[in-house]
Image (cartoon, rainbow, N blue to C red):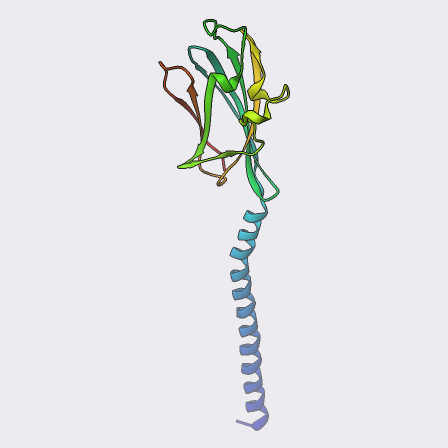
Length: 180
């Protein structure tokens, strides 16, 4: 074999190996980047869902209709706006009006975690006519309540627990699943 032919063969093998190695490196790099890119897309995709619940509960002194829950992200927090209406049925209460605060205790949980209402609506020091929880609802009256809770995650169902402030009734829970 001549030296030129041998040199050409070695050069061809070298070029094929180099090009093949570079292509393999590029394919390997792309394969490694794909999961990272998908992870970034998942992190960037913020949740914002409105869940129509429309579930009603009846108690001795009030009825409640959990209308909807909106789960969304804001300021690196996962929040849930809870919208409900309640009717004052406390005809034997001895007053022409009652507040939601007097009618029930209200607890929101995700798994074992009790969630915090971030607007401090249940604080008795926050009594005002603009605070839905302390609004004096007339007998037979229907009133809306809007509350916002900080969630622990985007997937665990939310338990909304009503415990009437009577001695004869127990708690009832409405569970809201968060769609993916």
